[in-house]
Length: 287
Length: 317
Image 1 (cartoon, rainbow over the protein chains, first blue to last red):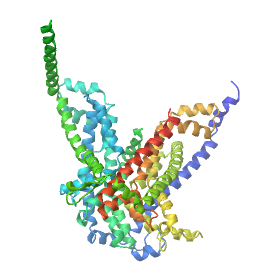
Image 2 (image 1 turned 30 degrees about the vertical axis):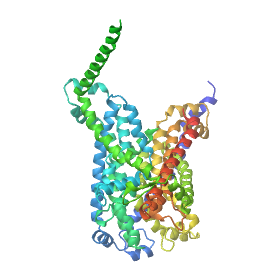
Image 3 (image 1 turned 120 degrees about the vertical axis):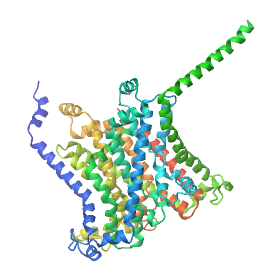
Image 4 (image 1 turned 90 degrees about the vertical axis):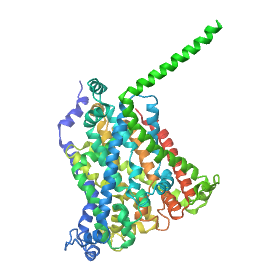
């Protein structure tokens, strides 16, 4: 063994280089982290400032704290109702997506029937479809169903999720068939096998899928903008967008409205960030 | 002989038919069949009603002069809607803006997300914490972000110009200037969705067996060689996928440009999806709107094919 080949090992034993590079990585990541959250914190504090202070003072924290902005957007602009609408739409969409995705994913992962994989590929290929292609006919259909300006019109187009089905199928393929067959021999019904064995084993991807779906539904803009026309039916992003023309430059209203829209998901994120990130990391599995 | 020959097929037929019948009976008795039917039945109905049928109607709408009051009276006009759409001066503008937007977002997003995820994959303590903080803008509503940046970029009272002032730099008009509006919007989009790609890429990077890099180090490879010759090729599939994702998302931009600038100033940030929306819901011209949507679909299929062809063979391991 010559000396040259042992050199890299010596480098690893001597930690200064490692410490230096770790230190610079930390500085870089810290900088990025600050850029990522600074606008959020700025607007949280800005939403408690009066208009005059917001446009004149450079200070980060309010000199005089006021709840007036929130009072006005909730009582005058219907943000309280919009919050409830958003919660209803996102919860129903999430529950439905979880139920349909896990059931369909299970059938495609663990049942055998002719044409199964072809049918799944057809369903999967709809993920490529831009929403604009179905936008107009879907609107005509919603008008025909009498669902315009109804939360149902927003919900009904999101009851199934192709991505969700794909994700659950991917996971459920790893559930051993022997387990299911053993339950069948013991006389368990199919529904019981699904609800009692398959679902409890799939809680991790279900949690990831549910926060992922909730977030997507909460932020959805184009479709609710078209379907929901009156203020008392609108979800938060649509009502928030309306503030732009309603309060041309009353930025304190904008910040309060934005925080009403952002904070509920942020609270969810603080408790379930693991699942948010796992859900996104799983989109990488498509490859 | 003849009779036998005639009888034999008939018997076979009978046997076959009873085979089928037995198979069907057997299937019907299976509890799996009923559970599968219960699940797939509604699924297929929903996909038919809310995806397949709208797609077919979209294709039909794009080639007729759509009558909103009486759809069945719509006359076939061939490619007339496509012609009308392309002759609209906004079409070329929207097309150029959309492609510039998608290209610029990609060129900025891919290197920065690779850079950040490389840093994240190398850091030894606090990786999850950093990752979850960098992910925060992804969780924020895009409409709120658009309003927030509109406010921060107000040329008179906005914080961004105050910061420039404090640093002694010249003020910028940000999104109120035709030449800077689109690049500024690209920067906001990258800030907003960087976390998504960072998470995907970091997961990909951490999946690469560590031993490979150790072996390369022993063989005397330097950092740059390892990045270009090992990390990138081993990330192959992930890179292809996020490139496609970035372009598909980019081509469909709507929320940010419509809330932040409403396509302005002038038409500097007017996008393809905004043209489709405007044609359909402001001008009530469903034909040209669906024609635009179908062109968008073709564009997406084309881009996806080209990207898959261009990237996959070189990097796949």
